[in-house]
Image (cartoon, rainbow, N blue to C red):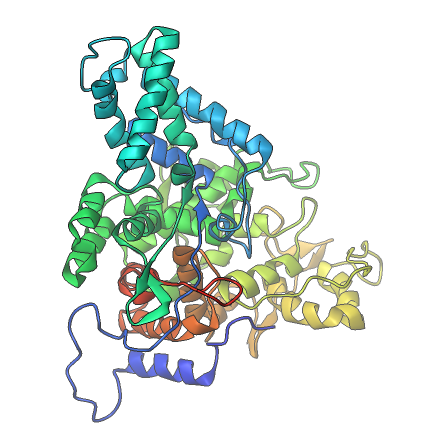
Length: 552
């Protein structure tokens, strides 16, 4: 049932110890600087090469060329998820033949926009002396390639790009038209579409390595901003500032203090909670008469704004995200939540009343609607979400050939609780359903789109349940039980480390995970503090130089 090895009494005791103030008689001063708490040995994880997600591709293009450049994300190679994360899928996904064509088409569409007469002066800083002007082309292409590829461009690469521009210009009899082909080549390069990690071998251990300054800059920027490094971060990589703890700290603080960090936490939450599915939320309108095409996107945005506000405006304790009564709604969500809309247009912050049955992350329509069927609720799916996304306890799929259909209502079994009992009585199904249904049934008073109700098939709903030995009477008490669950905090650390590193944590990284879990407790469970701690930890920069066969 459990994936993570850290969920043991030793780690829980350490977290409690840190939270309570340390050991009796421990009066040693805490070390200052980035080494604090990061003294446990660990083996670094694998090198990965993540493909840009659709969102990252769009962000990168707009960062390089301007916000008005139109990129149709749906026309790019689709993102693929692994273990619930697109960040993991990006590290294991190749590009299909159709995807190559899509990237080519997008590259030429972007290049055409960039070099349109009304925009070309943004990138063309020189006046060409002829249809083919090598010096001017080099001046234009060098900074674009460096920014797009997130590293210095060697002379051979730049010469090849200038050659493409020159040959195309001669054929087309237009200097700027020739540049389009060179820009398209930059955007189709694996150096743009992927985030390669070569690493530098550690002098003391050939099996270990470290990301170089430019690779580290790229990882930092995508972690904090979900886009490519800006000029300042690339300059820090070039100067060696990222190799110095103080210089690294300065860049981490700059990135976190930027308004763009809000986009970074939204990207993480979107991936972690699988909110992208809400863009095409499908519910049977004959059953859920309040469902509409705008419900899914509104629910997604409401949750993202809630998490952004919690992390940056409140700097709250992560555990309180499970029980908070603050959330963001527009008029559509306000009607669903039965509260007054704070604004006539757009989203606004509301605090749900104490009498509201809705609270915390599990009370969000985004979670309730995603983890339900098109025609009904699903205690099993909702319980699975809690187990896997919030507690890092994977659930095995049902055995092949087992009927997973929920029985239709009958005189003997009218409510969903009663109908699901048959699964818990089946030897093939009982193991998993006993772990999932008692959690999900606590949310049964919310229907398949997240609207509160008190009856199912005209029978009062029993929303009681149990979470690993803690009984609860309803969704509000479930939220409290989840907040106090010993796996909640370690799981969140695991999820953010996984997202930041682009790979599932290995056994060798257990010590790094333990250190960061303790650090989060010491910092009051604040998410921004965890992001900073992850970026400062050797985990973030260390990579294994050993291949799958076990050789360097």
